Image (cartoon, rainbow over all chains, first blue to last red; front, side, top):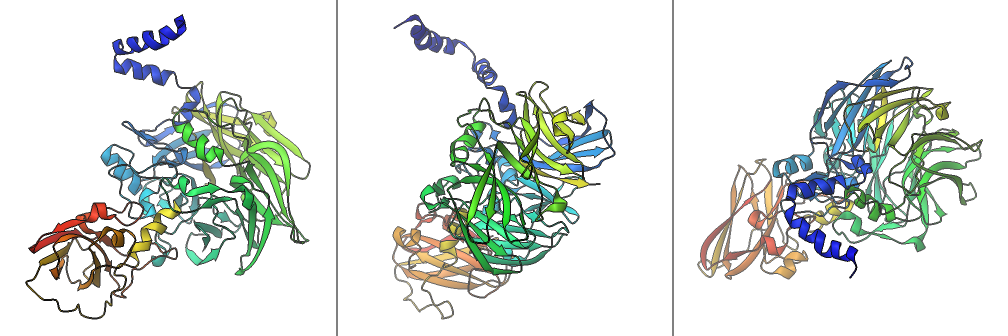
Length: 477
Length: 152
């Protein structure tokens, strides 16, 4: 036994008994890598506050960037088992020219209410096992309402994927409650990625194993029509896409089998099945085509469009397999970086002759977004985050990829920013947030969409560090 | 999580499997064996009927098999009772749902998820599916006994 072994085996163990537990806990916290600020807990609502402008002068832009993401992972000695299972915190980043403000409130879900009362995380989730005290009458009892937020009519919808949307007041962020679009559709799943036509009509699907329920809502968020449609295979579905005339449902070979808890254990990766793309006619859901693609794993797709010859194109951020979902994301909550994300931006083409092809852009990218006024229509640019370097989790750059010119315009915030999704704000700007690890504060950044590499036009800094969020919407004032 | 509610539904939608609900319960010889009164309470909507299945073994209960008895009770207030006579003393468990619209079926959404109140004996909680025998079963001794179930 050498000296080092002795120190570790005997010295440190003995020392441990001499150090008070609180000091040891503090040391353990201090030893965590600083990116874990991106999965920190927010203990309560964030009261409205002004932001400090730290750079540039803003154009005359007025609106609110609503964003949603998990922000409570731990209670006492209990913890969520997965990044996707924290309580949804809806943030309102309000911009009026140079002035910007922040307010944020948790979505008041049955899950959160129960766990606040118990002081423990008990409800099961995507990757969280249920604990004593759990109450699961329906999937909505486990609804974390933590994935996306859109405005529909005069209310916000905080979205999850395996249950109902939750309505909120856009001004106060008061939770109104889980939405039942029609009496017999209570608790039906409503994915976090509705596709919104330029005139505001909302299409969505809800995933139920080998079938999906197709939702059509008016621009005010009222139920118009719905129908169950069979899938080529019982794929896990987080996102789908749409052209002006079609719904496009990419089915990955991550297949739901017998129910197990947590839910992720019900899914098995079966690459031998390949991937399938189901294309439905919006006007007649019985008109369907199926295309074959190689096995790929994904969470997010870009808007789709159809070309004159009938070719349908859409982009997606494709992983080789499900390691990030199964091992990477649970590790994040524990402060472990166990999986290097390499989401690769690809363009899928569904040709009139029945072939489907993939074209890689050659960059890593996630959270693809494009101009809402072009949703479902031909476009060239895809806004995304990227710069996944493998040295720590989360993105570090924002960019726009031009599929026609093959040109990449991007800005690297550097290793000290955890970069969240950016979205178009008006015709010429992008808006989004980063968590600045040095300032220990979340920042709001506005870019000129035509000159991203120049860096932010304007940046504001808040006085709080909010955990990394998922998706959001720019709503003009 | 989609599978959560699929599983939760399976056994509930068919509570009373194999029972002809419209017919009156068969007369059973009174004063032999055990007599169990099941009282449902905290009923939120005073309308429709409660349909329940009584199981006397774990295998049938947990596999959604055939119950030993079934019953129907018209709901007119916050509580209603059902009496089973002539039971063999032993262990039993109950699955019930409140057929609020009175159509004899558990109302479900298009994915088969229950949309009417349901409950299990011992007020056992559903855990990603119907409560299991282990949590829902209780002793029925010889003579008269009662169990109470909150159905919400």
